[in-house]
Amino acid sequence: MMSGWSDEDEERLRAEVEKGIVFSKIAPLIGKTRNACIGKAHRLGLEIFTTRGSNTKRKTKIKPPPKPKPKPKPTPILLVPAPVGGGISILKLKDASCRWIFDDKTFCGRIQSVGSYCKDHAPIVYRPPEERPRHAHSRQHFHRPR
Figure (tube, rainbow, N blue to C red):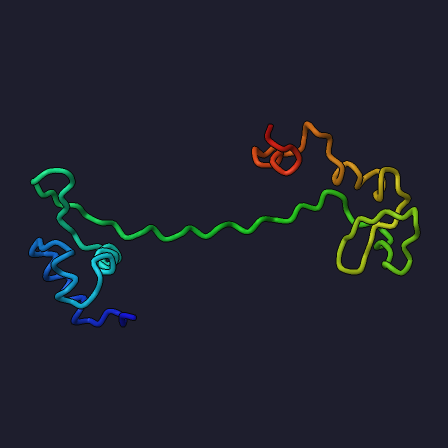
């Protein structure tokens, strides 16, 4: 396994690239592979000379990869406020109690109307088919190709 890049290796790579020497010739001089030299030149942002299908050389500036933009944190949406009484604990849930959970310990507890949820929470949980997101890959799990 090859070791990392020393400062001397980087300087030698810079010097050889500036001379216009191809990477297949630079690699044995430094003791690295051709692809390692190309990758390091790319990460250092060196200008390299490339030939693509012709004998003419053109100067190409390799740009360092862009820094990833931080993703904004999603803001939680509270569609239905917690009941005034604060809800009920899991120990007080009954068969007909709404199973909507507000936090780790508190459930809605109102009377169920559709499925396991009350009239306010059922529309959130059970969406009509036309409102559900459609994905191209979703049918693969349910239908076999003919």
